[in-house]
Each structure stands twice: as structure tokens, then as C-alpha cells.
Image 1 (cartoon, rainbow, N blue to C red):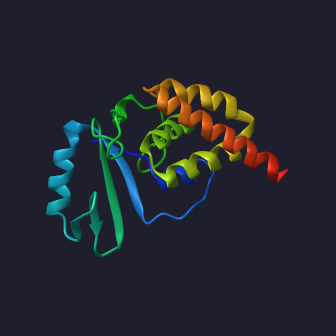
Image 2 (cartoon, rainbow, N blue to C red; image 1 turned 180 degrees about the vertical axis):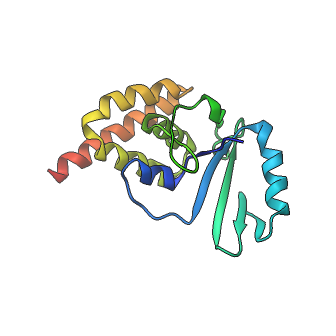
Length: 162
């Protein structure tokens, strides 16, 4: 099983340090059932919201499954983690910055939009190439427009900081 860390911990890896209460992972559909079964059988893990919570450590595990919708009402689906370009980080890989930006754009969550803007500001010299690379991963024109709007917002915020 090769899950990929896609949430706040991946954001932190790429240079925007923010707090997070859980670990978000992306797993292949074929591996999801085995992961759910294993966590149910492990001491301290309980089913919780969109994943599990370790009651001994107080850490949540949000499991995103390939092929599932990224948000209620969205037409976007989580990709197969094996198809993502990743950075080898121990103990689990994280997506490259462009891949992470694309995943964040399709989530439809305000927190993820803010992550995209902050990451782009921290990598402003690469903003154009990151936009191009992330756009290639996005399936819909709506998602590409959303990314474009977030890039404009990041540029405006970065300019105000100077």
C-alpha cells in the first residue's frame, strides 16, 4: 500500500507552515478496503467522520479514495495516487508542489484555496510554471478558471507585501 499525504502536512513540506489536526492521505480504490479493515482491527483506532481517529494519540486520519468526489456536488474525483508525481518523504510521499496545488484547487474548500494562495506566494518566482503544471492535471475548465483566480489573488497579495 502506497498512500500519499495530501493535506496540511504536504502543505507544510512545501513551505507554508500551518497547523493541522489530522493527516490526509490519498489511497488507491483497490487498497481502501484493506486499509479500513486494518484500522478497525488496530487498538486505539475508531471510525470518525471521513476516516479514523486514534483515541490514544488524538490524531485524525482523513482517507481520500481514488475515484471518489473531492467535495459534495463536485464533478472532480480524486486521482489514483500512483499517477501523481511525488516527493519521497519518510514515511510517506507527498505530491510535488504542482500536483498538490491541483488537488487543492479541486477540493472546493476555502481552507484549500487559502493554502494554494499561500504556497504560490512562497514560490512566487515559479508561479507561472506552477500554474501551467497544475493546469495540466485539472480536468475541467471550471477548475482551471479557479486556479487562475487563485494565482491572480496570490500575485496581488504578494505585491501588497513588498
